[in-house]
Length: 185
Length: 185
DNA sequence: ATTTAATTTCTGAAATTTTTGAATACTAAA
DNA sequence: TTTAGTATTCAAAAATTTCAGAAATTAAAT
Image (cartoon, rainbow over the protein chains, first blue to last red):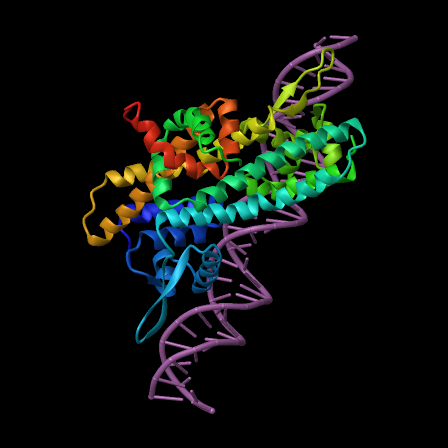
């Protein structure tokens, strides 16, 4: 119910970072708290531990659920809901990433697509459109990549991560590799 | 000085996205405006174009400079300052990425490091520490990767980007590649 | 030195976001 | 049904952020 000093520090830090990560202080704290707490907690426990109102916790839970970061547990014979993290740290990071992409990139991508179809008349417009095209291409690439990463198996991911500076080397070999099987793409 | 309808739409969109990208509306608009405008603009032109106060523009410029997204130009015999984007779209994306890492990841990484050194006593603490360790490792990996990406040559990046779904295939070959030269790491 | 042109800083007002807590709704079981 | 233990909603209050415009500052030109 009460947190060790170090754990409290972590939870408060999550609160402070909350808005940078895409939610607000309370929700940051809640997320931090739930991920370092072994046993799922009830809404009241959360409210007490963080000294925030019960209503606020309820809002926060809804928000965290919309990010798919927490899930509900039930204990037989107990009608309270118990909340805990929705998956591994990696899962959660992925969810945050995905959700932020949806909020920070997708709307822009869609606007840019529309905008690029338009024909440019003046010189200024041509320049603007050129820039927008570049932004579009960049965002599209990021989008494709993130989809790609999520498609990889955890093992592949693991080895990709471990690759580190080996990425350069792998790239150097890429041509040879992809040529042999002679696959288009 | 005045923007075409489509360009205005883009600039306003940047404003709306501003807070999601890490700054506020005005600064988002300024950033959008400067990146699609061919010629560098003065602070007054920016204020007029966006219908915001001169003081606000000044603040915004400082902020955008702290992100290293814009740079100053001077015209001989003219004492006004002219502002334009600090580099290519790719450069700017990199800056945003880098800056956000600094704000969203680094502080947490540092807190986690401290926290992990501490010894865990209770069972709860052990669990919390384990989770923090995982978060730490994940963030560290992201950090290493982003550093790695920035080290790649533009050509390598290009080919990495084009790789797309080929990444899986490349990974499958990775072992063979890295085994042959018998290099550690 | 003084004037003029430009930029920056500062303050409080306005807008926005977050939080509370009382009212309301829900749900299982008595 | 009613009740008791929950969870949710939402209007109002509090806190925070953004912004315009005035005042202060800086720097060039005369």
